[in-house]
Image (cartoon, rainbow, N blue to C red; front, top):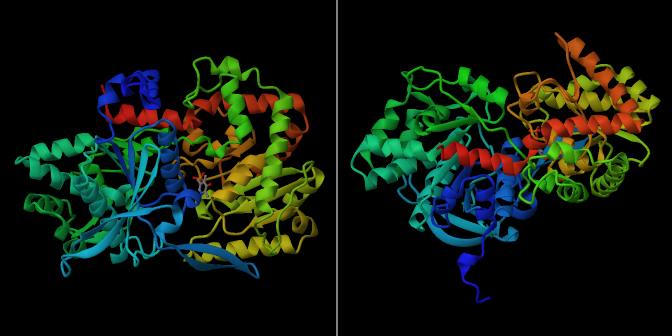
Length: 579
Ligand SMILES: *Cc1c(COP(=O)(O)O)cnc(C)c1O
């Protein structure tokens, strides 16, 4: 108790020493924290905020890892006043809303604040805060904010939500006395924080070029989108109404105006590219594709570095994390040890089988509270093999591949006493996907084998993601090559000693040659056939101790360093503070 603070090293100091960045100890501090802006965070249990997919899972994992490492981090993200839930009626997807209040999730209201529009100089909003160790989650809120991603990408309501978080959040943290040493934009809709920062720097510095230079030095734009062309965009009249009234310096307004195209519209990524000195994609392949797809205002290719996503230990069975640590495969920070390859050798098949057993029990416990397509809870016996597909139901992820040949699927499941669980919501307006889902479920309902062995878990969320990561035997991940920015589900699968059947895409493609069951083919039919063959192979591997151990070993050997969330944090620190 009487020990002076200085003798107690924080985890953060120890971590910085471990990654040889002691110089950052006095750079990223409580008053000059890392600021992370995201329109989406996916941590329903602790925060009551439910993201839509990978972007929000990444934001939540970044916060979890930062908390573990005592990193001073401020996450700025809207608190949405409602969530969408899925329920099936006669195999038809339907949605209902749940109303939410920040106080129910341990947030405290810490201030009244405001943003401005052209008709209303004071649009009141409330700032809520929840502190989780060294991480502060700052959540601008207003009862009419609505659910995440309500309205079209280029709609007024979206812009309002983005301005609320970007301008509201940035101005609030500055006013409170924080001076961020890094500003990370988790996708371009958070770019208003960077505009607020530029405006702020200009207040302190008369020279526009210098202010822009400082803004760029401080800012990282993390891109998760594949094509600039596919993004929504805004008209200048929308900016006149929602954006410009929040900017103090005319020179900033003029600069933003100059970024618009001749048709008086703009994509937010254009602004993010111009305002960020550091840009990254979330896997090697994605960074490469982004560098050739994205251009700056002048039409020159923008350069994106690669910082592949990682995950937190939240997604890994506790018993497995304990074993990785005890065996010296990962260190206390979660970084792979220098000799992790040798240490992996100590993992034996009895342990792997034991982990599978514990994971299966946990999964069954979680799925007993959920509903399948018939409204029943799900239970998979311990001796049955289990395949899973758990992703948002968007076309490029191709869950349809599994249902391409129902007889072949039924044959595999029947021959090997296997089940298949899938989960994932189609985006509300996507009628083609909604019809596909109904068709898959009808197909299963009319085939006695599939009726018994294929289960759709309603209302896909983190709990389902975790349950299947822990308790399934083999994950199927078959995005169209070149379309998945990174994906993190497959990381959860590999970390939990499951088999992976996958196309070579996203972060999976960081390593070659393939160490998993690689889905190959020059066209869709060939890929589909390759996937079915791998399902049979997976069953054979699961039946054979030697083969199983070897396969798990080679997956872990390749991906342990990539999966590590602490490794991701290290990469971001090095990206922002280059030497
Ligand atoms: C892990 C996870 C994701 C990320 O999924 P990818 O498709 O691999 O990017 C999305 N949603 C939930 C609920 C998750 O648990």
